Image 1 (cartoon, chains in turn green, red):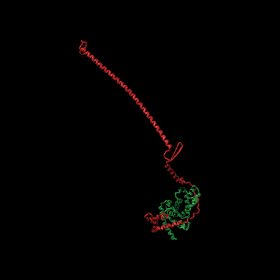
Image 2: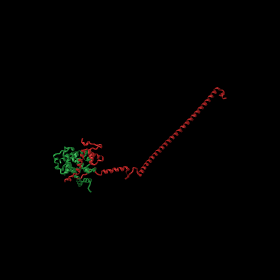
Image 3: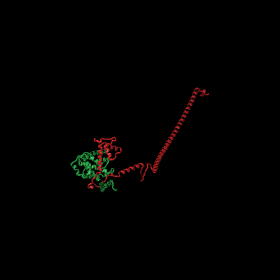
Image 4: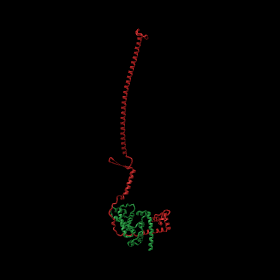
Length: 182
Length: 227
């Protein structure tokens, strides 16, 4: 009832109040961590990505104008940190390329400690190119509108719709394969 | 070209747009019917919708993993001073100053300082004191100009009169001298004429006497004409 809004916590954090910053972090860390799991497919990478995202958020906190929601702004930063993360991990792979599963990736199951129900979705998402995976993540898990996704990722709304459609086609095939294997 | 991109309807909504509208709940009655029709007629589209539905449900049921303990304090990089142009009150201040400027413009606000007094007025018109002051200044200027003009005029008239009287005196003096000269000339002329006439008269008398003497030298010079 008396919970402070994101904007109030940001204002206090900007004044040097660490507790306000930690409260803000606590409020959003789970969503960013799970975003990292779905985007990277690994818990350790998700943790690293989360840390990078929050450091970046803190550095840019003064530039947050409150024009949109903090969550939307947070995910736009997360998106760009995620792209950087991918480029660091796989410098030769374009964002629209279908990921090639390396021996490290094939052992994903061993590195992914999540419930069985979640695993199927996460594993299917890992086989999408980053550009499509981002739209699926933001649309289904982030519950953002296409306009917000477009703003966060720097693409047009129609491109976001198109990427989702193509991603769903691919996911459908992957799920069918998974069911057949099961 | 992918199959879904070529499927446009009369309304211009393709499969991607229909699916996007359905996911966001922005389909109206017409597009809703179109969506249902497309689902019935187009198996691949129906399959896409099914996958989207499955994923949406899966995302809702997705049990978020708990965040392992991590050093969150490391992300706090110390107090930072936000740049002044990102101050939250700046748009409000901007709006307030714009509003103030509009009010000042509409009310004709005037701020004047005179003789150490600050005057704020809300009208384009001058105050009565200001009007009186301006009228007094104008009147004194007018009076001064009039006096100057009158002085110049009277001096001009005076000078003109002096010149005219001088010229008249000169004329009168000149005219009387000329008349007297003419009168004397006339008198001298008359005297000279009279003298000439007398000389002629005496010359004739002498001549006649001479003739009489030569004609009758013994009669005492008396001619018959004299008898």
